[in-house]
Length: 380
Image 1 (tube, rainbow, N blue to C red):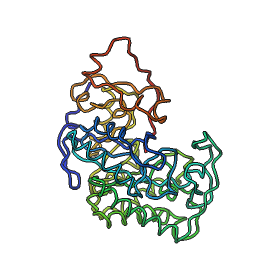
Image 2: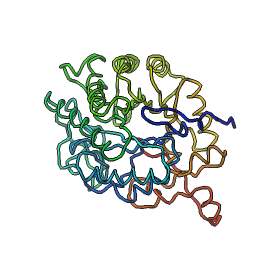
Image 3: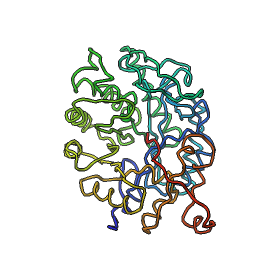
Image 4: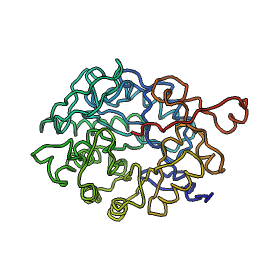
């Protein structure tokens, strides 16, 4: 195994000095209360993973309309702020170096059975699949096309959510413009059929993401803001079109803003769009590698390729999900826990959430204890 020692070097990120270059990627786990308030169990979960150089906490909605699935976290009410404050305090008490909170609006990825509201989107194009609700899987609904007033109000909601996040003890926020949610829906040609200033050419389709990011940066300072993108990602029925033009245009518009970082999801260092983004982005680049298997060797290999291709920091999802002491395991070249049965990822409770053992705990467990490997968690 090629040992990637650079992963354990300190690094600067906005207002923070990170103890290592390993970031915990945002992972939706559906453990919040029904209204989006973080729970004590979530505080325990994040505190277990405090050795990450930075934790990017899971996607949280900036308003009620933005809710995607049941028990998703939010950050638009005082109860949400208080719940998240309990989480950030627990991570600090465990020696954590800092946390950012991802801000996500689901757009058409939502349902009245979950939020009580009709979803909104750039255009009235429904999700081409069923969606999970408190009543089980249900057919998706046609979202309401956002008006100019809706767009302005949503931009303001993102800015307000960012201020709430800092009130809750976060060092910054990450604007989520990937994975088929609202901002990504504006970027994609198949979900954005608008004929106004927010639709059509790539320069117009990037406008909403840019305006949200600029408003959030104005609200809390650009050095406390990251942006997540995932060029070419087709999740949630997305077909971007003109990917090679879309993202360099977005990078050019935001490059001089002074953001803390740009976060590339599912980054392929061999892809031409990756190279164009790295060449055009003047600041810190966080890259989330594509892992072919959940092993220490694969994490080092995939991370090393990205670092060699110009990434500054590495964000990991599934490895942190299953390994609360991931940094220590990778440093020692120790084996990783596989991810448990997929059923436990989103059902609530401690099973498959806070009961993954550290190396020391695993050594003390009977050899008959087993963990069933499966596919990875939904990365927000």
